Length: 123
View 1: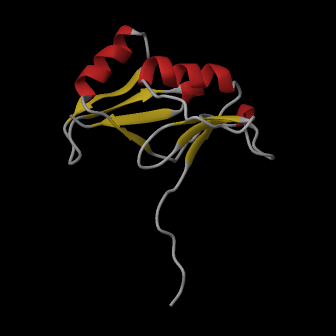
View 2 (view 1 turned 90 degrees about the horizontal axis):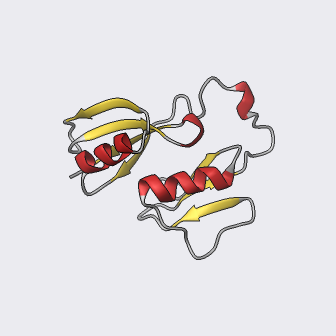
């Protein structure tokens, strides 16, 4: 029988400024740093899949892209999408798509670190 993938096991955004991006995730998204991170990244204690902010991989030039992550949809689960939306608006975070109903509960998209489009859903 052929071997197959089980599903995503780790997700990381490549950014120019790891410290600023990690601070955004902590301050605005409430993420907590994991106990251990490699020197080129900040790993967060997220379940079921670990999430990180990291330096660009060799060969990646973030200055040559129109928007980081173009073509990738990255969704985060939250206990209350409406409340998170209001918190981000109050903090001046750019909302890319308003709260709407979806098969996964209320959802909205916002601009994350360095222009990544992120979606939150739940609640």
